[in-house]
Length: 384
Image (cartoon, rainbow, N blue to C red):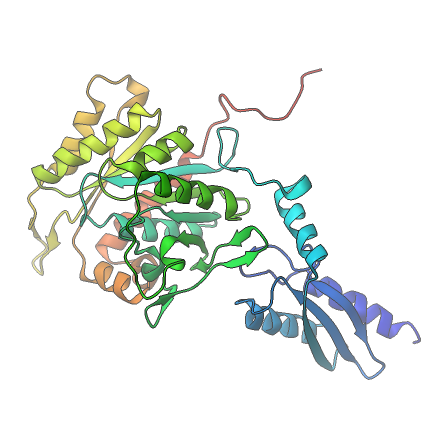
């Protein structure tokens, strides 16, 4: 049949519509990353793929997926994948397609956004806040949600390592497409961190204005796409970053992490109070390191008990019923949780039956089930 090669080329292009760009998470055909597609009489398919930039870190993955999709088309006997790079004009068109007309940089997580923004905070360091943030994000993503993390703990960044985005001590770099930053993806979660921009684990010694600009750039220049939930891993305490997040995202929800001992509970309460002062709503308290399960079934309370419940009680005092704060979970001490963070394998995936993993998964289900209401937001609809 004379039109068989043309028909096969159409089938190949349609199959390529199922290939996603690993960073943008959209079909490469929708991103105009597929050029000429042809199939010869012998069934050999030739596909031109246009990467966003020279040295694109996703190049091998895209080429592999394109080859597999092409060879999966009935009637194709072979695949010749020719990789090229977008022109400047094509990159500009891509940026405009992703960001809207003119490619104008705007912060997409404002009050009218459908993305739930949850800032994870603690009064003091060492309570496992980053480990909980990463595992919560992975659990939410595994449940089918589109999730991103901003590692706002500028001085103590650790999210890339926990999510396996560090190799030989070097964090995976984001891809820059002109002025747009595409975040790396770990276990289905899009991640941006200052650790991806510093060399050799260098220390970051910045003051308030620089910290504010960094958080603002992460929220504006990084293309996360359409997210259901954006988690922010805040540094401990009530300093510059917490204030900046309150200014930039006053509608965000706040998740307070503490440990059982009274000293941690006292300072955790302060972080919740500061969040409220900026207009943010506290979504709940998580008590981490709540005890070590023993072989006989008992719980060894290494750090005492009751801190999480006390923080929730204090933050609920004097509040209206709809502003009361719940203790969402008490996460037991877990060697597997710690080890998973060290090797970049979240325990919610590697061992979901672990008591700590089970507790985190339960929190993820509760957060996912709440959704975000439409009250007070513009729906872009004019009544007739």
